[in-house]
Length: 439
Image (cartoon, rainbow, N blue to C red; front, side, top):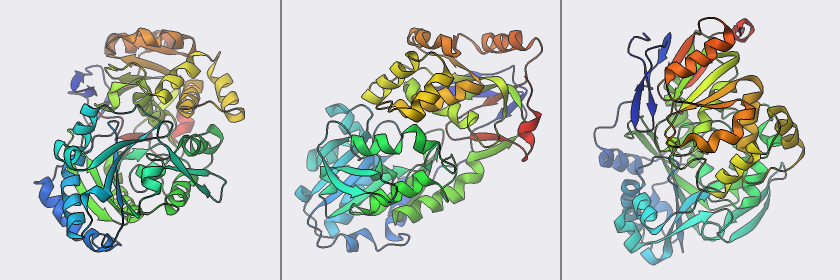
């Protein structure tokens, strides 16, 4: 793609990158003409499962798991149709609960709950956070790999659980969606920490864009099998926050179908290696450094990174919440700030627990072992100062970032602009591309 009009997201704004040598625009994903029509079709034609109004008939209780604010999802629209299906099944509204899958992210406020599920749902249905630390959970045994299974009790006790989620590339699970909204979003702290511990997420096969042979994905499937999760509605969203596709039915089949259909748009090969990659990050992932750092890991930990050794990744994000507001986000920053070097943190992570959010500090340290990391556009970049000794730098412009890279290289830098680095995973062409890295 011509780099003449290159630009990247920085939160909800667009940042021109006139200095780019190559440009990876957002995935071409056209919105559905009418979301309600798409949802009605998905619910009426489920994949690999009966229609919900038939499956839920006679269910004593139903839990509906929805994403928290870290993923843009039109949950209110989905919930309207799901509640209609459950009403047709004869399930009383006071036997239904909506669980907001917080994992170890921040809990939600009353206003936040209304925004996430809709005013009508808040008035009619019990809505509560499913939080790994603050919500009571139930022990449901262990997986074949020894994962302790703890699920928030409102979900664990339900006769039937339905998950609402978004399918997009995910560094550990391969893709989000499917069973993840329950197996992680509604899991207790012990389950989340075990599945996210560095020794586990470093296993072969745990990588972005891969579901088959992925130990992380397989473990989530085992966790979900101990719950009553029997149905899901998953969507694909584009960079404008519009729904591109909606599929319902068996959670695993729904996820794999959407992942297979949209992978060609998400997983892009480029003519690397580049010296600088300007990585655009759209809201809501741009709100905190914890979430925004995912873009750096997608770039750096790809099977064939498009970035030269020692190259610079520049995350373009406004970061109004700094590192982020939840316990995982706060610990993530503390763990990074408290280490002497990326190598020290990687070694410690493979040896000792790092606490909530520590796994993200671990993978960022893996990035920083090989590359440098910049942040551009932060509302207040001062919170990044404790990370400067690790190679993390705040910049005030694209030109300043590129100039810093060129000063290190003592030559002109080759620059790639990736408009939406959260949903576009770039990798270098060919099996031997990584051997040609320079710098």
